[in-house]
Amino acid sequence: MKTKTTRVSRQTKGHAAKSAGTRGKPTQPQPGRGKALNIEQDPAHVASAEVPLQLERSIGRRVKALRHNADLTVSELSKRAGISSGMLSKIETGSTSPSLATLHALSKALNVPVTSLFKLFEEQRDASFVPAGHGIVTERRGTRAGHQYQLLGHILTRRIIFEPYLITLTDRSDVFPIFQHTGVEYLYMLQGEVGYRHGSKIYKMRPGDSLLFDSDVPHGPEVLHKLPALYLSIIVSLPDSD
Image (tube, rainbow, N blue to C red; front, side, top):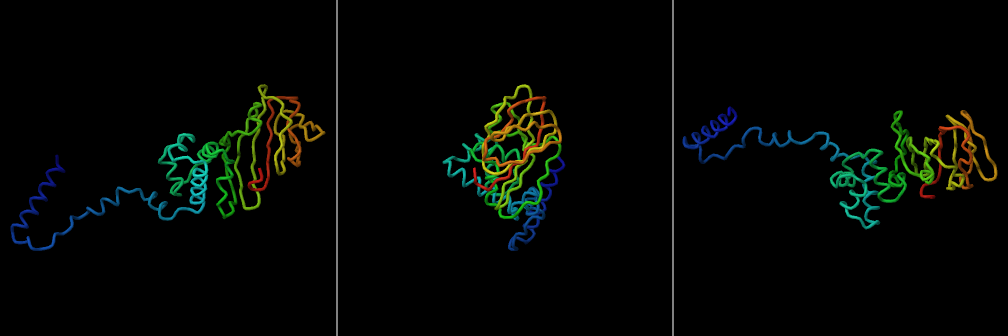
């Protein structure tokens, strides 16, 4: 009630001023009216919209291009990825920084590798930090065999794609010695024991053992000696080589 009384009082004073002979003078803007509009805006959002990072813009252009190639509307892609249409629009315009989980959801919805979303980014990323327990659970061919993959980060340059995974095998996992993809792969055993096949050879891997190989050759765990088994898998390949 106090605020309404104050406004009425100001209006009354304004009318009194006009009746006192100020009708011919230009109307003065009310103090604070323009400033009030600026205060309602989010400074962080304004700064992000004015100077978007090159990474955000490149991801946005790539997502939009892939969406057009798939003949999808913003609404259709947002539903597939499980995000709002507003969020997708912000991503495509480069006005927000999508999380790794959001990028993963978009890559699945567009049926492309998550690294493909960084194709237009020209600057090299020096580091990719993932806190303990925050790796993104993702799907690869072995997922159907009960292998759990956690993406621990990624580095994408114009020359290589570097993808580290933490792979977990349990008593629900099946053997799957027929992986085959371009590039090279490095394994480092952390827990358990696994007979890992590469071509015609089987390597019994225990904690501390490592294996580096050409991943064009069929490979994968063939014998699960001691479970649960946990190992680090690092895949290095050329962009768009798959």
